[in-house]
Picture (cartoon, rainbow, N blue to C red):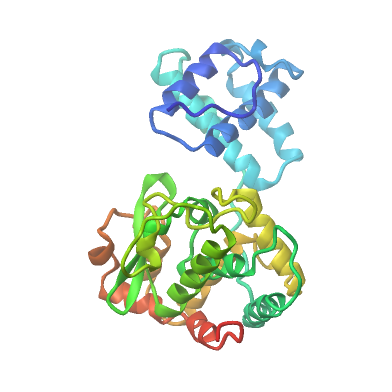
Amino acid sequence: MVVTPTARRDRPEWFNEFLADRGATKPSRHTLDAYCRDFDGIAAIIVGGPEVAAMRLEDITRDSLRTAFSIFAASHAAASARRCWSTWNTVCTYLYSSELIPGNPMSMVGRAKAQKSLPKALPPNAIDAILADLAHAQTQPQRRDDWVNRDRALVLTALLAGLRLDELVGMNVSDVHLVGDGGVLHVRGKGEKDRRVPIEVPLIGVIEDYLEDRIIRFPGRRRRHSPGGGLAAWPRGAPLFVSAKDETRITRSTVQYRVLRLFRRAGVSTEAGALVHGLRHTFATDLANANVSVYELKNLLGHESLATSQRYVDGAGRETRAAAARNPLYDRLNDDPSRT
């Protein structure tokens, strides 16, 4: 299936051919949309207006790109300018390799420096406040789109498995594997790199509580029957996290909204982290503070430098599993007053 960018706008045929070429690598819809936004941002400056389809290959020069990126950087954050530079470098590399331009001028175009500081992890008292708020919300009248057990499972999975937003959204029930006295999450990571993240009994209990509540919330849905019930009772491909309204797969925007709302109710400053990514960074920071090695940490996070496809039992490994089990958040979860 071809992924089509949502931003529908006339663009040069050579850029459309670039998108078709990139489609062979099966990029996400968000990646293709970002290519289009970055192209439009620079092309509009070069052609002097919104009609970016008027941009010619002859317009791609060192001087035109230098001028355009200077103007673009003045009104955009450094991270956006860096991403835009990367997009145009990829475009120009394609055009050069296709013999459509004489060379890639991007090496002579300045690139915004990356910020060296990392986003801050949520402080321990913030996690306690979030758990307390979820416990309190369970006893209060709820709106139609409120679903405390799901939100608890979402937040704690992000905190205890360090998942990215897209990884949370794309998780299926069948990706939760029970292994021995714990479990493993099969995570479809960035760049189609799978990884296996060990999880412990308290988080499995939270997920199972949510799934039992889900059956009550949507009683008419057909499910696979299993003598033991539990995770095996769900059909393969059933999304793990779903909408509170119709049990369809939860969206990125809904996840971010639920996390933001929970942060605000718990009095957590959103400046402490970028919502779901802030939860992921908290996971990494807590494990680093627990003396987990950098190798183990990168293996759990699925960073590209150490991301390799591994089978879910062997890939987790004893050392990596022990590293994940040392996460101090499990101690807090055991003391969560909402789970009795």
